[in-house]
Image (cartoon, rainbow, N blue to C red):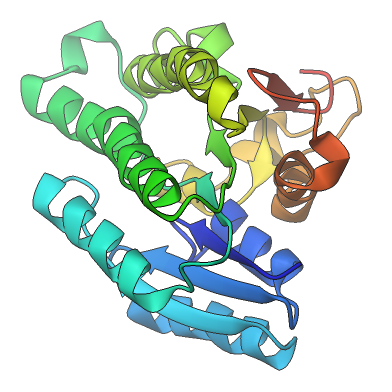
Length: 248
């Protein structure tokens, strides 16, 4: 059955891996990106070579008006008779910091994107599912940081992702009666550019061996878990948070 898949933060990392793995002739991919149009175009080109229909949507997820526009463009670009699934992936990290370094400005940006932005994106997607009556499911991307706390490192990031865990459970309860499943994945140490964005490009070189499986994971391994949760194979799975972390 053909479906529409909205992926936020699709220009790199886990979002890009989801787009590439999901790409097929029965898929219409709505790929969101923030600033890197060139990288998003590369992902879109790869998906099109696999037969997918692709629409790129730019939005700043720190800005509620941009999120509302994302919802409108998603509605206009997609088939109203098809299910809409959401990979609620976009997020940011900042440099290593202790409590004294957590300024109001840093905290506001972190929660604006990682928590408020994700909730508002889900709100847009659910409103679209309800208007169309064609159904759909949601996977939120959290982090193992949410249960580790990350004191003295990325405590604000961890807190923003812990909020996503709580939101996942609450939204799953709210939507279960409508047949909309809501789950989350918590990636661990994954080979993406998020470590460089956090000012530690060699972080995996230093601690990537520490999970019980002895290595960092790949974005593709996380994407496989996400796409399974959206599939009919997970038809009896909702309100679940799946660690993809090598046992860490």
